[in-house]
Image (cartoon, rainbow, N blue to C red; front, side, top):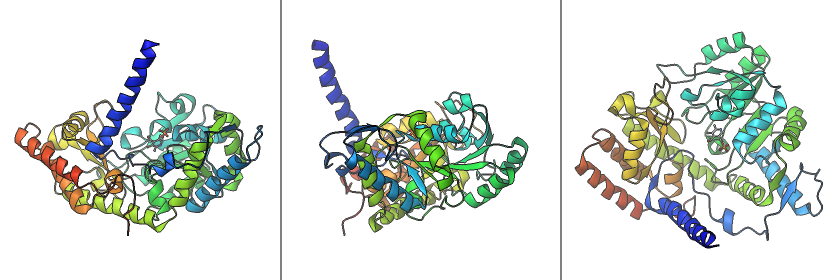
Length: 417
Ligand SMILES: Cc1ncc(COP(=O)(O)O)c(C=O)c1O
């Protein structure tokens, strides 16, 4: 019992430490965006109901409210993305992707996806992931000079490899995706086209990134990266795949769903339809443009030469002789959070990596503007270019401290008018 008492205290301490990061650091981790507290604390739900089964086909009594709430989340998701059908049940995007593969493929079927080093995700065929174990993945990538997706090479590979599914969407690709071109390639080789849009989902809703429909057959995303919502998986598709997708989710890869998350998702999807959300995304992009202007002063530092989105990747190894890990750790000592990132043509292990990924969702949600974004970029450059300079470090730490003092928002994602 004594150990449980200790565990109780340690649990609270762990939460305090983690919460402290939110208050005492500048968070540039690309998928980090603060979820408004109203999604957690003001829920008009007495308990966290759980129900199994697909919407309208649940082997449970007492689910009328559950069905209504899930139906609202489904309709809001379809309206926002122009989809014909949505399944909001997956617990994560990896699980959503698993359901899509299960719906469209048999074990051993061929899939063409973006290479991990070039921006792809674990669940897009990494050898150690379920995707790479059960399906025959081959990869396309970016042009080594421009850093942009090489659609001609992709097409050539699709023709020779003849995949049943082409997967697009990425974790660290900072540019728009040409869904129309990909759809033409898919049609040519007779494959389905799936887009994992976990990162740009909020930009799509705000009309600042190409729309995946009608070009893609299936789309997956989570509302927690750029939509200021809860973590979870959403699958969107056209009507012809709705039954296959739903069955692949349940009973295919999961059984029950927690109502609180479905409620939070519905709320976030409704909020994302508001002009304030578009305004938030515009400010996210403006802050990234401020980063682009600063980093752009150093040749070849930005993979692809810049960004169309909320994120960019910088090559720290070739620019400053620092690995991604060293850069991330140095910046953390200044209370700036980033994450090490593999880059196209990567020669180091992913845990070390040659670059760092930077995003502006969190700083924007906390009220920072372009002037402050420029200052943050300057601090990063001053330190990465002179990593042993203690004077620069002390000055930078003070500057970060001052930035933290002027943080304008703790819990709103739009400026009050
Ligand atoms: C493109 C992409 N897909 C999927 C995921 C994984 O999502 P989850 O952590 O919900 O499984 C991520 C995020 O890490 C991602 O960037």
